[in-house]
Amino acid sequence: MNEEQLAVQQSVIRRQHQKLSMKRLLKRGLFIFIGAILMAIGIEIFLVPNLIMDGGIVGISIILSSLTGIKLGLFLFLLNIPFFFLGYKQIGKTFALSTVFGITILSVAATFLHPVAAFTSDIILAAVFGGIALGAGVGIVIRYGGSLDGTEILAILLNKRFPFSVGEIVMFFNIFIFAWGGFVFGWDRAMYSVLAYFVAFKTIDVVIQGLDESKSAWIISDQYQEIGEAIIARLGRGVTYLTGEGAYTGDEKKVIFCVINRLEEAKLKSIVEDIDEGAFLAVADIAEVRGGRFKKRDIH
Image 1 (cartoon, rainbow, N blue to C red):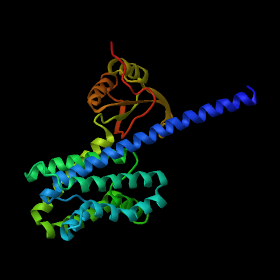
Image 2: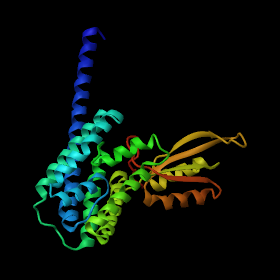
Image 3: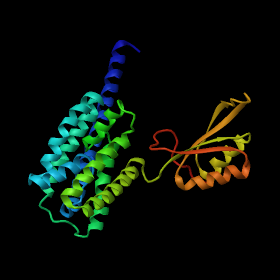
Image 4: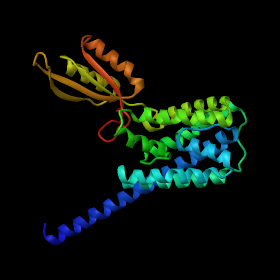
């Protein structure tokens, strides 16, 4: 291949990469937009009309908006600005830009949705469905590389300096916010807010991890080949044989690795027990699976 042909090939590769990058960027922007709109619906259509709060900056914004009469969308934007700069310096440019885009959409959408009447005046329904909408929106934004609440960014940064996990730091902030909300809105509303927060928290997990809840399985057995063939034949899943060494005996062992979903876990255990009751089996949750041949094969 001469220099001219090589230059043409490199130019084609660059154009393909640019198209792929633009496609990913548009996809990210679209889903962050959808996530921010869902969160705004959860806040303005369900939570705020019923005096229910969320945690973090959103909760602080709801309280301040109620006390001052200033629009919620303005507080959502202004209170998150410092965390945008923190995220830009400490976490990365892409994350920070995705975050400021999401927060801007959230603030604008919350402002436009504020005059819309609440879907329900039932407090429990508002807490549950508001939590679902809010959690789904936050989960989508996190999954596509952004954030809608600066508290999480602050918790990530504090986690590097203090012996507390990100979850513990966020929980501490939220205890303070819900307690403050109890004085402003009443303790019954604070408790409903905790319910909404719990529903949102669980919904975030479902959105980020997916409904399939993929699991990784590690199996060590002398009958590894028979077990591997049974998994392929009866579950339709591919397997990988890895080579390991027992630390105590020094014997070489074959390790079977495969990825399944939660509905197949019981069947996998049954397959292993039928072939080798003494086999070592470890199963763990996986947040995301990409590439390879994870797609299930047809079982004949």
